[in-house]
Image (cartoon, rainbow, N blue to C red; front, side, top):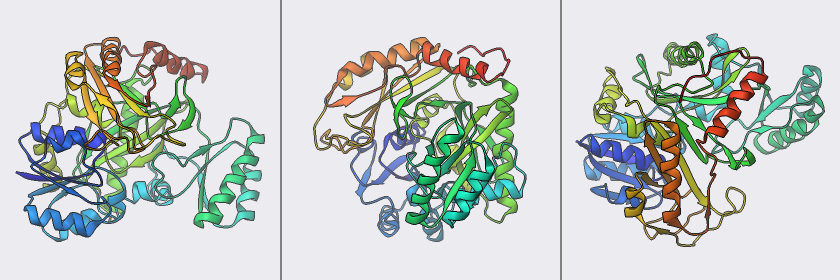
Length: 438
């Protein structure tokens, strides 16, 4: 089967590998030639992923049987609508359904209307004075968010104290003047985790839980990025997520898929729930309308079920099963020095792929071209897979020295110390639970 994959990041490298492993003949369109995907693909077109016309033209010229959309930006442009209108079944939500990610006001309103569990108190403002009055009357710390896509970098969690709301109001005013609207939510304290599911619009099949490290620097310091790495556990839970909270999070995503169907905007593809495990239980922070990056690299190497069969089940409306191996995974991203604020670009790096492989790690290319020149975002990911978290982290760490250049990464991703820190945070919130082994 000829399969078109749209996108050229680390997430797409993992998707492409899984599709080829499933027997697909792979064709790719992305804005740069990803070195990992280039060696997997039978055809490679260079175009902006949001250029729906060019992507469609490539798909028709190649005569693909199925398409798989990696990133969120082309979903907002209606790429799934265009491909399916031209007879190409596509894994990914329509423009209307993708609003779960591309329009946060839509997502919050949907949760409110259909009483989806795990929802937050929110308001959308267009008027600066009204916004300022509401924040003052609310009297508790808030979170300020742009309504559209931000690449994981637009949310502002200002602080823990009421006095910090002055900074929140200033940021919200800036967004209203820039975008016309802003979303303000109640602040929720806890520890974040990711649950991704496959869905055909009715049936929902969960993947292993993962935890992302969004801050740029070790110790969870520095600016928010698209994610510097992530880990998952052999039992598919996380040490600080009891099974009952996992079930509650899964129920939130099932209820969301049901609500989208009732809303007349049926959702199919991959649905990603970013949750905050609070004292009261899991609260949805945001939806993503596609695989997470890096979390795709945690789950796809463990997938035992044929991804092509899953893809066909999604587009045909008869999704079956998805089985994952019982291993731990640790993903560590190497990013250009200065990322995300002022990243180095145009500089070549050296990658000893054989040595990375000998270390037992997997390698995925992201924002780097076929000449191994840095393009400005997270460049290369290494993935350790093992029976235990400690061993998976050791494998990922041992692969890093075989990649040389103006790069940095977080050594603490997936370490026992960083995991225990998250357990302590939950305990400090007053949650009494027996931590799961990892």
